Image 1 (spheres, one colour):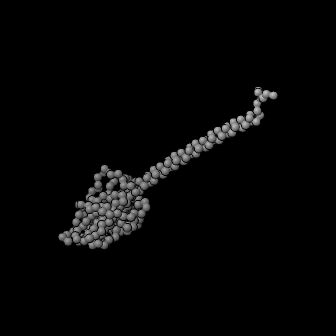
Image 2 (cartoon, helix red, strand yellow; image 1 turned 90 degrees about the vertical axis):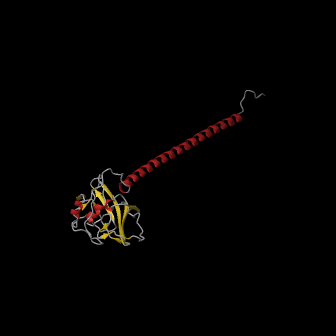
Image 3 (cartoon, one colour; image 1 turned 45 degrees about the vertical axis):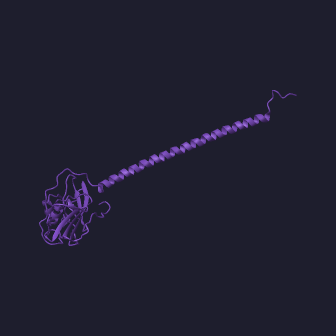
Length: 247
């Protein structure tokens, strides 16, 4: 008997199974592709978020750094009138009896508390005959602690604090010496005079400063050195200072 016109059951079953496998394989492939794409999207989101967070942290960090560490932009206001102290004793030089009156005489503002609009620090080294001279604590501060100048010291490290109510002023080393009541000019440091044997040299950040050191401008994290002694003395000039964090 002829089999023409009849379907082989086993062949039909095999074709159906093969079709089902291909369908399953396509579904698995599509699922795998979707999974890969989803992982890519997640990675992109993580990278974008991480970059944004890093940028935000950087901006905040730079802003915080700028508040306490970066030097101010160059100010256009003129330097204050040249001033200095009158004391001509030999070192060490103690605190004066009335720092508030001397601060006002040096055109420095005095208030019960530090100002907050301007806040930076400069360091001063005074070296006489190769030996450091102490820059005393509390220059510019009333002995009773009831008032202080916008330019003052808190300890004996030589760190000069500028804490002012406005940020439109400039300050000089001569103003500090006026508060300290120690004479300072191109040839004089207290009772020490430059002569044929001894010199008075000034340096800013390790570089020589020509002229009257009382005119040296105080700038953020600056390093100032006044060195008095024999002309041929070999003295190591400080060119920087290890400020504390936030100074």
